Image (tube, rainbow over the protein chains, first blue to last red):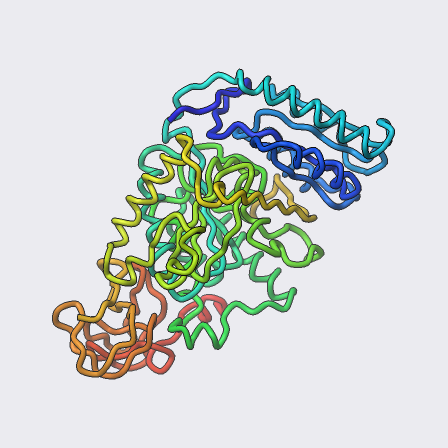
Length: 391
Length: 88
């Protein structure tokens, strides 16, 4: 696989330009700029005007991500976002960057013109980014499940788990989530921790999620789960947990923090402190963005009912757990894990397919969501204490 | 033969991939004792009252009565151990 070597030493599997709005009021100008290009120019940004450490950290991680070659920051001019600090961080990472401030550039039309010219130049500049081999042990791979059904936990998720085991054996960094869906299996999970500190962190993260979701009025186990064949809380959570595989768990990450070592990490997506921030991740895209902000080059998305989302920053690979859904949504699905349900493939067979497609897509082949042009992005407010991580 | 999945080699239950009928044979030798819905669990060996139910290679609860090979495993004959964890 040939990667893109960044000045900070990181290697990407894509070479995208981000056009980033720093408040909703600057989004229109960004959309107009992006619409002028067919190349890998992606729209990202932050809607809210209030300052918030979490959103800053996510945007910093996204704009200095391995897959990003250049960033145009588009500011209205009076928003609270600390654009200078973000600009400095991007400069430090060696990426091409510019700030475009609409209030200082005679408004909409002129800003679109200046922004488009900058992007045109950036396209030429990032073509010169050196290419270098990228090995499996340099990859960061994330996984998420969404639009789940009774099949997800017995076909797609265990297959991703087996693929994760292989990637970790080969030295990659792998990240799974979501703590709210792991309620009930935290004691099982803690037994896989590399040490007592990590075990404590894992228990803390899931117990925090349970407290948070309870306050939000969101129960963990429903009658529908029982009708679908699930009997206990721990069984339900094991379905989601299965995508983590069977490797030792090296640590708990907060969104935007990069895994320090090789191995398997749990992404703790539920805010710290008081339950002030509504539902932690109101949609799958928010979770995909957090995985990417924590360094994921690529995201494995297991779906039973059939999600279609993707990302413009890191390729999303769809693993369809249900054979009927696969038939209906084949155009959107990269892997048919429903073959396990039909008895046409084993979990190991599908794990191998996943392993191979990750290498192909990292090597430049487009995933289905990339071919279709999916480039969803979502970012809301949260609070994380990135220092304290235990009781 | 109808398809069921044993997710881990240590499991004492398997999951049905289609609706099973009484009299079906699964995993070559296990006789299904009653109708079992898609994605529900079947005991693939005799499980005694109090024994752990193993799925994904881990305990997902305990048997509340003796369960025969080929019998449906669900809320009527197993219970969560997680609730106990929470009380302790």
